[in-house]
Length: 239
Image (tube, rainbow, N blue to C red):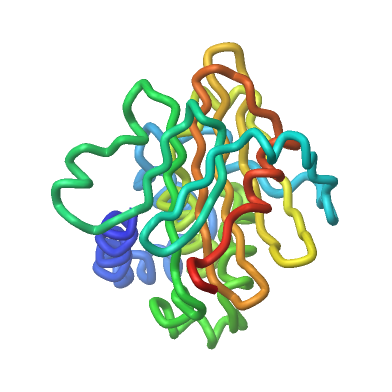
């Protein structure tokens, strides 16, 4: 996931002169067409017309459910998951990305962790557009819509949304929400269907650490309340 993000960042940078030309001489309509053409077919779906539909504040956590989870101590974070879901922390090694365990048929939770200011350090020029924090960056990314593109910045965040979004199944029942707890805040995109449930959780803790928890639930046993319980167990190791 890290390698994919950095690789696509370089692609975005290389396309900036073309995007500038399109935006200046073609206007918003041509800019939308240009971005649409650049989005891979696998992502040309509901996610690009979706923004957070509801905000959940301090969701109730089922303590009885937490007691049945398996606790993982990964290289940088800790998390508790159902026993049938394998935990994998994101790495940048070539071997890991060849295996891509989240794309197999097994139930898996793929976890990514980044230190505070990761996104702002990666894209410092966004400060000129009023994006001054990692939280601002994530909010603009999750709220980006293809049909709302009017500026280069709009186009940038739509592209980033595609980079950020893993496999969410057929997206027929795709939903997105924002949430906040006593120590975390962020967004969850999820798709619930008969074959499998998919959850893409992107959030920050109270220290500004960023976490991505992508869960592919092939048994269909998880719901949004159980995902909130899982998120409540996520923390920086020794943090």
